[in-house]
Image (cartoon, rainbow, N blue to C red; front, side, top):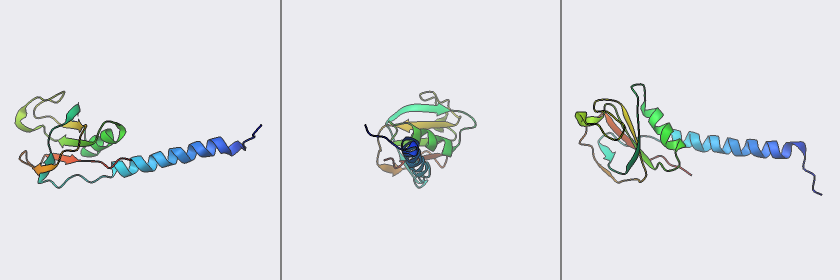
Length: 118
């Protein structure tokens, strides 16, 4: 029978947890795309809250295994409702594909990013 030291399991779990934290930190520190560009389409989930920040939106994407990119809209452009977002409100859109950058015709309140995930 193989006997493992008392630290083996707990130390291994701590090492894995530390690696995950580093990965999440790297994802959460992804810079947003330059403001003159956006990534259109591929929206599959939305969040809206008046207190939602761009960093909150990035963190939501980093925690969602399907999310490949995001759009942070403050306010939602055009005054139109979209998914669960209301026109004129703050909206975070998660995207399941990374679209190429295109010229931002929405204005400076729409920012996108494509977080680097493992």
